[in-house]
Amino acid sequence: MKRDAADRQFSNVRISLWVGDFLSRDIDSVKDRKYIHVTTIGRKTGKPHEVELWFALADGKIYLSHEGERTDWMKNAAKNRAVGVKIGSVRFDATAKILKAGSARDAGAKALYEKYYKPATKEVIDDWFSLSTVVELTPVMA
Image (cartoon, rainbow, N blue to C red; front, side):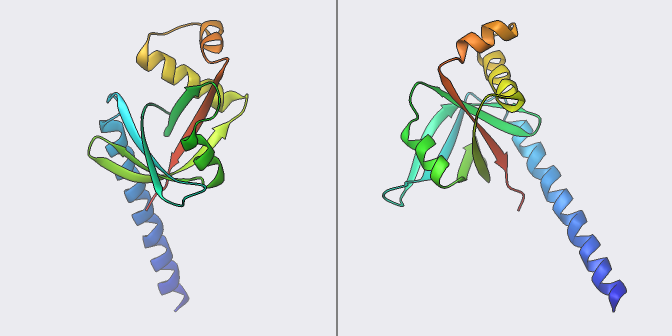
């Protein structure tokens, strides 16, 4: 009996890895699209709130940003980190995280800047994002 349970557990791990690899390939196939649609749950209304944004992909994470004060979608994501994502025909769930200073924020800012503009020095990217909030989305594997 123990062997059967262990075999089933191993099969579940393999299935999970396969699903994760499949999702990773789907996301990679749409990484050059200009826009992402992110759906948050309204922190006051509880209703879905969809926005269209620029995005960039780096190290299996999706990065978004907005200059200035936090917008409604950011405030919603801060309260309920579970978000829906659509890029082209690819749909999946993700977990949102508002990034503070650090390597993840730097990676996100660099990926965003270089996708929509061109490669630049750290100083140029830091200056460009000095007033921006960077958000990281981590895809949730089914």
